[in-house]
Length: 126
Image 1 (cartoon, rainbow, N blue to C red):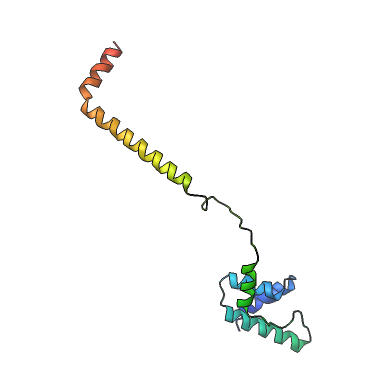
Image 2 (image 1 turned 60 degrees about the vertical axis):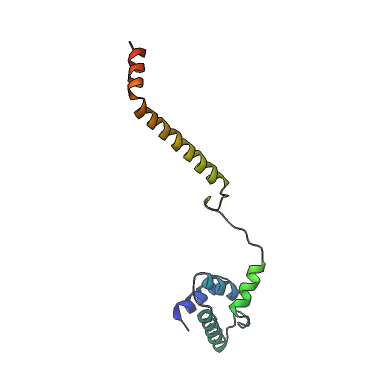
C-alpha cells in the first residue's frame, strides 16, 4: 500500500468523486494498477473498521474499469493543429521547393549573364 495513492484516493472521495473514478484518475496519472487496487482495498478496510463505508467494495480490478471506459465514446479536445491533415503541409512543401528552384535559377542566371545585366541597367537609367 502506497501512502501517496491512499492520500489521493481519500482526497478524491472527500471531493465527492467515486472510488472508481479516483482509481482511473490515478491510473491515467501513471501509477501502477496493482498499487492503486491495493491502496483502494486498504482504504476500504480502514473505512469498514471505522464503520464508515463510503463506497461498495473494490470488486472490479482496474482492467475492467479501463475496458468499460474504452467502450464509451470520448470527445477529443484539440488545443493545436498538430493532428491536422497533412495535405496542407505537403502543398506548402511542394510550393517552397518550387520557389527554391526558381530562386536558384535566378541566382545562376545572374552569375552567367552578369555583364549583360550590368549593361542593361546602365542603359535603363541613363
